[in-house]
Image (cartoon, rainbow, N blue to C red; front, side, top):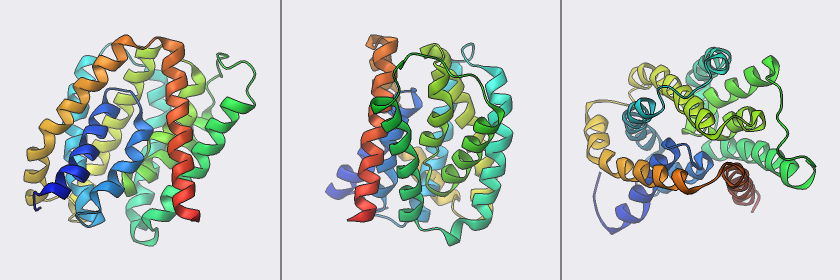
Length: 248
């Protein structure tokens, strides 16, 4: 991993975005992180370096939100995510990064577009739904394994539940902690994460920590209604960008 000017304009911003996402704010922003890193390294290498950083960040975030999460939602989502991760490990070589991001883009664009243009009562809570939760979690596990991009499918289920801001963030953090720990042995078995990539992850972790601190400060000053509107807006913009990149 050569550290040069291009590195600072690609890898460093990508890792900061992952850190901000780990604070619970703007997980969809990380859709651009993997493409940024692949400018200076192969996809497999980027994925292998990112995963330990995500796990380190998860542990910090879990400690902060250790009392603020919805256990019932996690019991539904985590087993289905594990199924998606396993499918991803078996089919990883058959899907291009571009196709996966296009699928995520379609899902996110329709989801956020419906919220902004068709949903009349934007603060109305949806009820928990086994089928929807299971489906979104399978997709989240699959896309998380393949491109570390499970945030949008996860949001498709969690956001309409309109949980208290802290509970939403905590539930999301615990969910991805389990997801990333399940992914780790599979990444090692596929040689995507190894001793060399782990050393590179450790070198970059302080950058992720900076992103986490930025995210926590932002969360303190954002009120709940604005918080949800920001998340939907980020999903809409990033999803539209993914569709544009694929189609143009």
